[in-house]
Image (tube, rainbow, N blue to C red):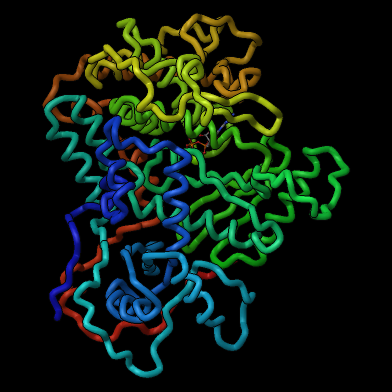
Length: 554
Ligand code: GTP
Ligand code: MG
């Protein structure tokens, strides 16, 4: 009876690949991608959204509560999987419970209570806590209970990365290992989709077709542990029943579209701030070209940026996702360069006059479309546009055409480039250290050299909205610093002998800066804080007292 099935628990498994624990067959396929099992981006988003809809997050006393939680939740219907994570230094513990179907979550919602004494807004959401049982719950035989617990401390992870990089055969292997160890894992993805679902559910009373689309690094395959969640909140869907004769009365939109969006976002910001459990530190950045609401969801420890103006971020994420799927060198290379840039201070999480992660990603992709060998690793956007089929036709709200081939299994031209990751990294450093940023623009639509249309220090043509410069914010000083750091990196990488102290990647991310490289990992959610796994097996007592401290919402 005590023998519990705990699948694939491995030491330091916390930063292993997304989908590692998933029982969803479709998603499992993603981790071993081949042309046959490629899942188009929007379909992948749908799978994750459905998975979030049949899941709840429950705050518990400790990971040990899972047996009792399993028994209690099973009375509503079949459980598919459970995942433990914790938040904070003095951690609060949570378990994601995924059910076999969404209707079980509805029954749970219908039979769950609000906090005793009527304190707090009576909001219903997928975030709950597990209260102490009045009568000791008779545990059912829960031999099928399983909990994916990921464990390992951040200090151990930091050490593991250093050891893994130090023990690698060559720089290419270091690049792959860094990617494997730091990329956003399955629990991280689930938490982001559940965070998105909370805001979507909150407004569906008034806007039944509202959808919160995650985009950016949470879903495009370039996200690392702790990355932010970019959300596009769309109030209506595009489906129209043209034949229907009864039409809803709607409030007319009578001011300019931008100021209306800003007003709507203010209201959404207030709603998040006042009513949604776990959401706090709401900031309204409404004067930006794309107005956004920033907030922090404390129960998942996810930092969110909500926008409402257009779908371009979602289509852009699709484009980046496809590029990552087309060749398995793309993501490890992007990860390494983003890590390097953060370490040497080229990028910074605060907005400013420096290169953003997004711009840097486009720089890497543009390089891979046109490497010095003359053999592209990935195609230009024009090539994907030429092959767009009927189902690939999309347009932005302002009519901009964003049609390009989404199902890359239909992309026939395979790359002839066989360069190692080490070589590509070195060539990247050299390529941009010599790039004529003064006169040329970077273009991912085509490989022809394009003169800069205006005098920004760095000009990266937005591949989907070509009139826009993605790196407009970057100053001349930052471009200079970027070029110097590129030269430095190329020089260090070439001069450092393999297998000496801090060789390869460690040499370009060394000293106190290595610590910076890991800082984000160690201050964010610990979807996998150290859990004494033995104690979970050994201790069979009833553990589900109400959590001593609940995470306070703002
Ligand atoms: P991290 O959040 O740093 O992990 O990377 P990210 O790729 O998610 O970048 P960020 O959160 O800054 O942006 C999210 C998405 O918004 C990007 O992937 C783009 O699709 C889009 N985006 C960001 N900056 C720009 C910009 O300057 N112009 C345009 N058109 N889109 C942008
Ligand atoms: Mg982001």
